[in-house]
Image (cartoon, rainbow, N blue to C red; front, side, top):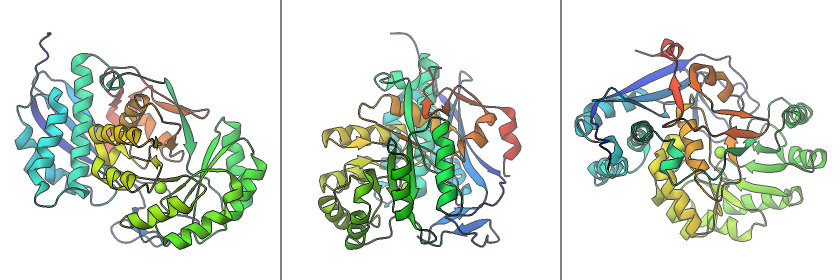
Length: 387
Ligand code: MG
């Protein structure tokens, strides 16, 4: 067996912010508070008005560096404190190839205190992604090889930002993306516009595309079923997040009464979140989010989905690119994965800050074959560090 031994010497969480022009949020221009946040008027969720993330850097004795990333969109400096105070002292000297053992050891450290989700798991996701990157670099293999092999070199992408105010502008936005080669689109429900008529118009104008609807966790099961009946003729691929996160029974009632597949999972951190819902027959499409799960839990969720004959269609939000690269590496290794979400407004803004072959063009993501995750920060990224 070749000697692959290396040892973790340093772990740094780097908080980054990039200003952006304020754009309407779900058709509205909400008030930005003094810390730079807005509150979504439909579901009450907090969002930053600029781009924020936490990049994680793990350095080894050999000088090799692994890159991770998690959600830094709210109170991102929390991750830095967890890394400094709890994670770095525990992991110094450990072998990065023990990545799954390390995830479990860190999880076990805080389990009985009730830290089984939230910021603690976000920090674990970033560490896990960086360790998988190191595994690939040490073994000179792309991460998808280490996960069992690449099932596809490209991954179909669905567009999740249909921009414009008014349905005509949104139809135009879809047409532009259609002409670029995209064939799958998700409509976000909001009170500010008639998303039901938009779905009907889209289906009529684009009979050959896949259409999805995201209901953003705000409905009771009865309300969700009533909406689903209105869009039954639109041949939707899924309806996402119809009920609140906590309402597993409601989700199961929706799944039972719906003629359209139910999807969910962007807020999950571990396979236990997936298990509770798959066991309850509450959905048939899971949407794990790499920036919250890390690779280890992302793959465990996908493996569990296979047992329940559910499909995997990963979520993708507002990272800068590292957890996106991790999501594509993992997605390439999963058998039943018809689509990966594409934040078409976000990814192109950040890709120039990295050396990577990763891209999303003409309806497909490219999976890279470079060792590790296949993404390295350029110096320009560090211009956006928040001290
Ligand atoms: Mg969503």
